[in-house]
Image (cartoon, rainbow, N blue to C red; front, side, top):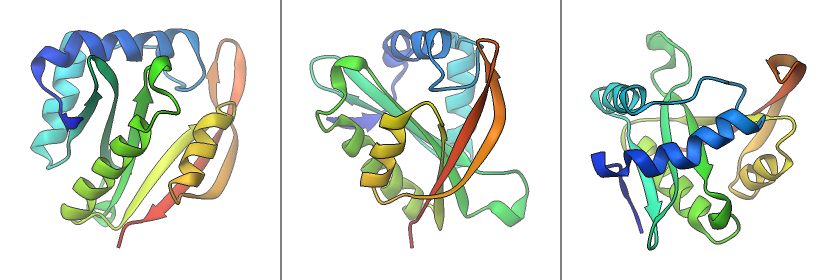
Length: 161
């Protein structure tokens, strides 16, 4: 089941997200989320008409959210998303359900394009986005740094309208 985030989801979201932040290059950030930073991010996105969606099936399987791709009113119709799955949920349809929900919500809010910034080391993420209709539009070499090494960013895009 896919639904909007509720406050009681906070611990489960953090239990999925923080190990990925801490232990992988799926995200370039090394700053773990706290209940307060998560709540503030979700409140900010919702105030802007965006959403934070979770997938569950007897427990939280993952989450997805989106916000404006870049600042300024020239980018009001370009969004960038985040999608994170628990390891147990990969390959079972939760990612597809979350992505569909995010695309539908963004489209209904007037988004024209949806971007994905995927770590060059995340071949599974690149493949998933390709299956969801995203096109690779650029690889930006050595734009991120984590674990003492430079990381490439694969920028992918999908037109929603």
